[in-house]
Length: 502
Ligand SMILES: Nc1ncnc2c1ncn2[C@@H]1O[C@H](COP(=O)(O)OP(=O)(O)OP(=O)(O)O)[C@@H](O)[C@H]1O
Ligand SMILES: [Mg+2]
Image (cartoon, rainbow, N blue to C red; front, side, top):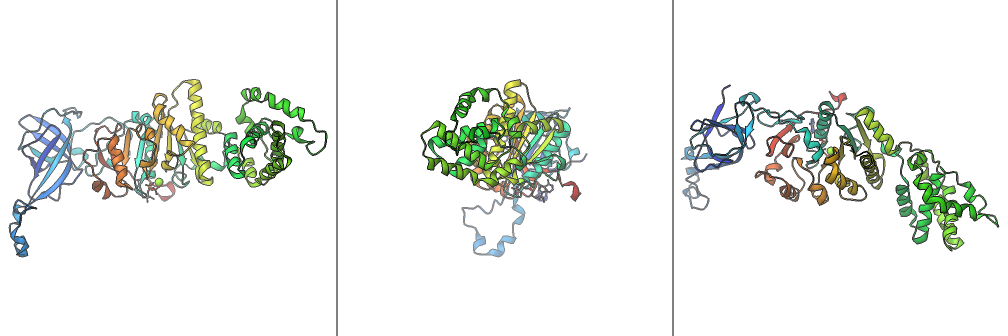
């Protein structure tokens, strides 16, 4: 292996920051974020590092001193040979003969030569094996993600089109191939994952909504208040517990001399019934009829309050107008439990959220995560599930999904429940979520504020907004716990194409 010398260590190096003068003629070879080896013959030590802060200098053209060139522009052509380039090498470690890196404890000796790492074979670096998402941009070295980092959560941040979703696909493929983890994907757009996991997609509009969700929806749509709210809630539970067979409570509503006793008895039993019933199973079998529910709500309202007939009528009619909503409920057949069973069997499930409204998407994320936590709380065993939420800013800020994402961010590591949150706007995540993500991939960002936020959690090693502004598609800085170099490095994500395009 013949390494290319590109510069020399100058005065003032520290164990981690080494100022370098670049050799004449090598200016086109050195690039920000490229890897180098510093060979210190005095200390018989090799340092491995990354180039930062390239600067071109001209000792004759001090920025703050008047130069004769401003009067005679043609003079600029003279004395060009005095221009020189400097850079800093941020040392990532001392290379040991076995290819391991050790933390640097001594500065490299000035006058040591610096060599460019152009191919993986140029350096004897043996990083731990792990999940390979791409290669270092300039050397082609693979920098594998530590599998252990999955449970400490991963953030993928970048402006639109930077390649976040493809990076996630690369990650999922590696996780499925190299670990015993399962992957559950919440696909916000419905476009990003279905081509890769074709037979594993569940449409959100076929997922059964639980009673809380139905209640919230109806409450909003028909704007009920006070005791009518309670009547609606109770009626929904009653309706579900009887799988829609509630005629006996409403059959003679219109006649004089009705028998409210059956209903009030039932209402008294409700808490006990709820305790002993598998609501999810009941929901599966419930046939929704808007008219019937409307009548039941009126009946319950009468039973628990002194409501006027006109109030009851209004409520009953408003509910019966929600025919389309109830029709859609009847078409839903999959429960959160079914999804987890499928996940255990197939190892991967993609939930296409695009077919339902925004509020419902958040509910679905919430209810499936809640189901996973229910399982953890009862079995107290690690689940080894990686939960991917794409376009996560839609979920990591608003209720109810944010609550479950926060819990997962805080406690997931103990139970092997990891998050991958991909987003254009990381700044919107709740603090609790942000502070619990330990590995990041970030590219061009939407706002400088996003970088400041990252700076609060990560050692960015001097990467500035201007550095990331120039990144191309597929280029991400890889930083944080999962990075074996423990310092942000620039990777190019491997190519990922849907099968039909290959
Ligand atoms: N790893 C990759 N391999 C091949 N093409 C890629 C890769 N990454 C990005 N691209 C190209 O860039 C486009 C955008 O990528 P992607 O959809 O992953 O971006 P994104 O950051 O998720 O964007 P958005 O924020 O809009 O969801 C892709 O359609 C593809 O053409
Ligand atoms: Mg995307």
